[in-house]
Image (cartoon, rainbow, N blue to C red; front, side, top):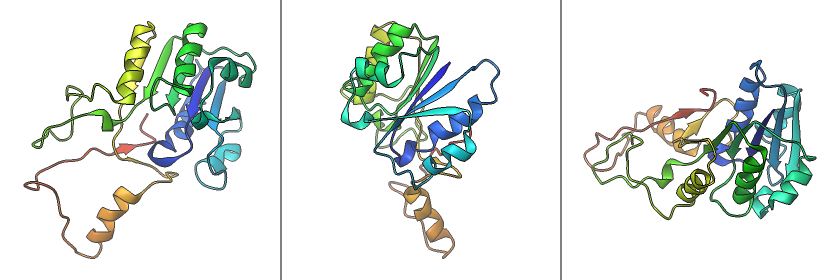
Amino acid sequence: AALIVQNKGGGHGELGYQLAKNLMQNEKITSITILQDDACNDEKEPFKSYAADLPNVKVVKAPISEGLTSEQMQELLGGATYEYVWDNASKNAQGSGEAVLNCAKQWGVKLLTYVSSAGMYTPGSDGPFPMPETTPVKPGAGQNLYDQAAIEAGLPLVSFRPQYIYGPKANKYDYIDWYFDRLVRNLPLPIPEDGTQLVSLTNSEDE
């Protein structure tokens, strides 16, 4: 059984949707549940495509961004347990983030995957870019504290730190549209420093 804790949108908005589509094709996964932040806009992608594209996925709405206790999370999930958990919502190890960690511990999960953020890195003015995993991180960053809490709890953690997410049903394109808007008009692309910086793009379907 797999649980995807899904945020309300933004750059991460499409990841849970694409992950659920992929997991539907995995014979090892017997059931999929999305615990969806109820602050999402059901009229926008990818949320409006849940019913049509994820017919066998159970979607449970929850006030994730407001903060849940582990008891509330368990109750919303009907007391179910999960072997695999993907946390695509938590920004730190407090509130709902702490609840995810506590529940994962109680369930004895085989894998906890945390969709973190490259915003926790602290590269120097000269990079390196794209940033490798060896780039120093901000000790007090919420995502780093989540990682540390999961490790201290003995959870089997995989932490994924995407940069500039895009995909067919993404609901945040500002950072990519800016480039293409200038390219099609033959306008220069101002790049900081000496102009040799590279950037990483994360395709939401590439999981």
